[in-house]
Length: 333
Image (cartoon, rainbow, N blue to C red):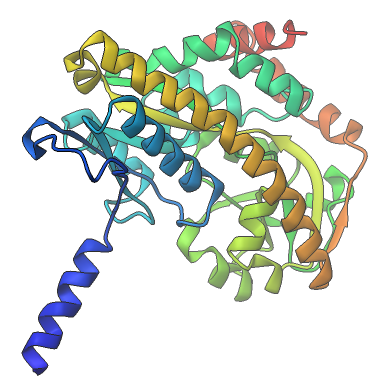
């Protein structure tokens, strides 16, 4: 009985490892006729992006009448975002959801999202992402074996700290701020007067608790879901960058699909992007309300001084591909 219990436990843990969306369970379609696409990401199953991916998988299954199914691996089960991008390029995965930040090392133009105050606000950002520039960025990865399907909203990144509100760039002086493994993110914090300190996301709570860093920068839902509000009591909505997530598919997998299957995949992805933005808006409002109830002071600072502080950083991109892209983004109205 003991051994049987172990075997059952192993079986349950194995089938719980991924999320497979198959709705036409009554179909007589043979398993060999079904194309299974493995999709990996780093977020938990309650995150709006995971829910959007599950939505996308469901819509694709419906459109294909069960002939195309997506198997989703959340929570970094198959590795970090950088690991999964590498797996996607060598064909071990069919699809990956990643932040655009880790793509900088593969696609330098993605660095534009890490430059502070490139976008005037959320509406401007999505006008760009849903327009010609957004399409160009999705297709840019084809030269390295990646094809973008759609963007997902990751909100605006803002500063939060243990014991000091960031009311102006001057308040960042001497503050060790955790950043992503991104040269652009590090340059951004330096331009604003802080001391950038790369720390793995999974280690950030402890780093804040032990004061290895004084603060970090991210969106409100991430601040809440990772319980950083337990340590950091000040959240400044300076909204310096908007770094979206992107859904990628292997170029080889894409090109192996018939045109009608490509259409199903693209349509399902586009629908999931719209759905995710609705979920994200709700989650952001809820997160800000909940952290304030737990004692966090939330401030909307005057962004003028922050914008002024990064002008020199902007000028440093003049004459570069990122600078040209920034200029085009600024012309979108």
